[in-house]
Image (cartoon, rainbow, N blue to C red; front, side, top):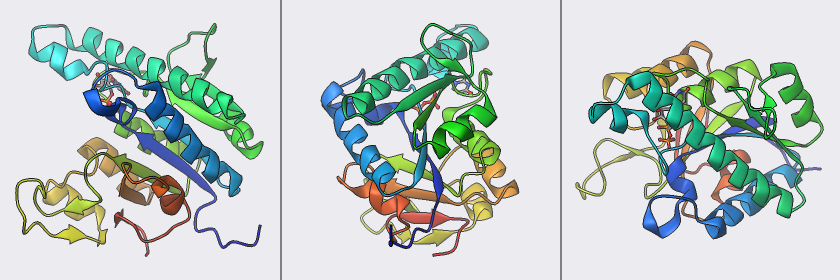
Length: 242
Ligand code: UDP
């Protein structure tokens, strides 16, 4: 392959919402299939891909907690939601003949491998897409933090943060403020100090401490996963060099 690749190994963070389609909740297999097609393109360009799925299209721990549930229990439910999304994505990828492995941070041997770092790296070297399910396996964390943690562990070159309805990071909400300004690049510290909507602060700190670039881009535009993975200047780049 003659193309100049900026990244050799990436983590794609897909929010639960990205799997939901029009309704905004649940799983739309057509949407998942189109995501899988885009992921396949990235693999075909020789880039190693791991995916971290969110679960917000099914359940978020904090919503249950705010309505009186035990926080840890509600969070474990959220982690299970990410497993459902991971299996849906695996199904779509395998339909397209992309070999995949789901690795779960909570053991469930009948449907997923346990998370084993070295094995995950080996799979990626063999051009298999690894889907990290069940978050970090710990309550009080998010799948953004999972993406940051796994990126550090497997030495990914970047995290691609796929966002719905927005094409990067703005200084204010572009849906509410027509004068909102988009950033092409940002430092991690600006994200924290200005409370910008990139990832939560735990995840952002982990990326900062380990110098992991974050590419924030719009998932609604077909082909954007490949563009971001190839290092095209789309969206906003946090903590990296354009
Ligand atoms: N979660 C957790 N620990 C983790 C990752 C996720 O407890 O390490 C739970 C948490 O309740 C969270 C839910 O799983 O609300 C779904 O993940 P997230 O909200 O990050 O999904 P997204 O917003 O990306 O769809």
